[in-house]
Amino acid sequence: MIGDVTAPDGAFRAVLARISDKLELVRVWPLYGGVSAQVTALEAVQPDGAAERLVIREYGLRDRERDARVAAHEYDLLSRLHAAGLPVPRPLLADESGSILPGPYLVIEYVAGDAMIDPARAPVPQASVLTQLATELMRIHDAPVPVHELCYLADMTERATNRIGTRQAVADEWLNEPAVRATLDRVWPPPPPAERALLHGDYWPGNTLWRDGALVSVIDWEDAAAGDPVADLANARMEICIGFDAAAATEFTRQYCALRPGADLSSLPHWDFYAALRHAGRMDTWGLPADELARLRTGHRRFIAMITAD
Image (cartoon, rainbow, N blue to C red; front, top):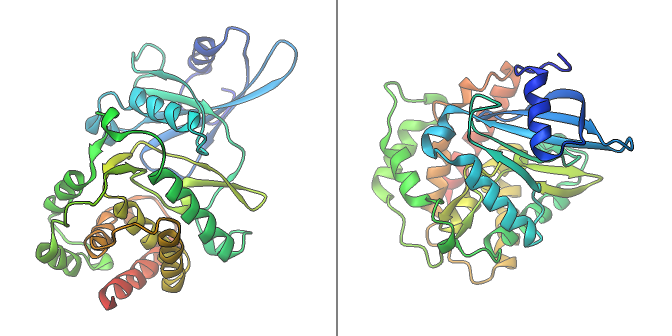
């Protein structure tokens, strides 16, 4: 083995050969941080010694069950976004054949940078983080990518309705699931969106890469959907409240609305409570250290207090 990964070296060499027969595998190592896919980095060299780094995303069962062609669809979406000038990894290969790796996978360019898993500890001023996150979310929602051409995108309201209708045998008391569901039972569904836009589907600081204080890439697009952009806004508000505090979430919202002055926020209470439900029953399955899990739960309770008071 060249690195601490599960696939044999020969499989990764075969993947490289699909991209270029001139690439020679040098190093393999796992990339951490995601929960829905196995992500592996490859380093290869050209005959002239020039080094190239690539990333392989092998999709998990949840993504494959939701979309049997998830690799091809994410390849198409990233191609469109990259061509439109958005900061997303350039896709290089989508393979759903199962002939090299056991399931569908996507190969993208390696973007050097650090994911902002814990924004409060990031070496970037909070004000800059909020401004850059709001700006990139605005650019996603205003991207010149017609959603009517992307028939593979799920409808966000339909996805949320299905999630709300799926109940666990035991409610997640740590994340106030009974109270959140009681509110959703009263207010769901949200009003029809004033606009139907491309959504990232899981926009939060941990799905962005940063280098030298700048947001250089928005990653992990397997949850992309079409629908009310307020759904993305609400999810980002929750994660920013968890990572920073309620004041930061409010400031992020203000900046986003200043960038998109026509945004209709009438559905924000609905999507806020849906965002609060998303992690219920899942957070303690992520294999986090006890102190990190406690930090996230505390931040989540802070968000519940924020949206309940609004």
